[in-house]
Amino acid sequence: EAAVTQSPRSKVAVTGGKVTLSCHQTNNHDYMYWYRQDTGHGLRLIHYSYVADSTEKGDIPDGYKASRPSQENFSLILELASLSQTAVYFCASRYTISAETLYFGSGTRLTVL
Amino acid sequence: SQLAEENSWALSVHEGESVTVNCSYKTSITALQWYRQKSGKGPAQLILIRSNEREKRNGRLRATLDTSSQSSSLSITATRCEDTAVYFCATGDTNAYKVIFGKGTHLHVLP
Image 1 (spheres, chains in turn yellow, blue):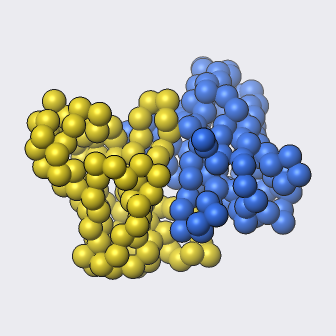
Image 2 (image 1 turned 135 degrees about the vertical axis):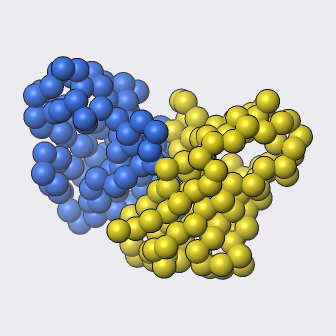
């Protein structure tokens, strides 16, 4: 069974602080994704990666950086957290370009105060 | 604007009834996916239907795809309280690496 683990499960951060959200997959999948979920907006793509040491911008990358140091790990970094970044963040992995199914983690609830 | 979008924000049905969630999309696709997200969990795929398929079934679930009208539907028969969830449709972008989700339909199955 595909496994994607996110940490932490929840976090409270202060405005202007640095936040790192981590994602680890044991699926041996090439592709990894970070999505943000807000009420009324569904899931929006922030960053994705199809190979280690390389990341790509999604649809809403402003204010976020991503890091893929290995095939298994994909981090989302908020250098200067803002109130508007309060949301639930989901990481997902995908096997190959021809395999469309995404496998999601359980999410990280981030509250910026 | 959304590449894929469900047509209803929320639906309510009583247990045992059938319900259909509709989705429209804006680009040519190779496949359309339906996901379900239960409270506190990440989305999980229910059905993937490819562009050369008209219908796909998975137990009580039935997905249809109409490429001429760029629409899809997900029907659930004999609904149960545990079907209460948010249902998303998702498609690939012209950039095949990207998977774009609709805003979701909140389904409430009442006892």
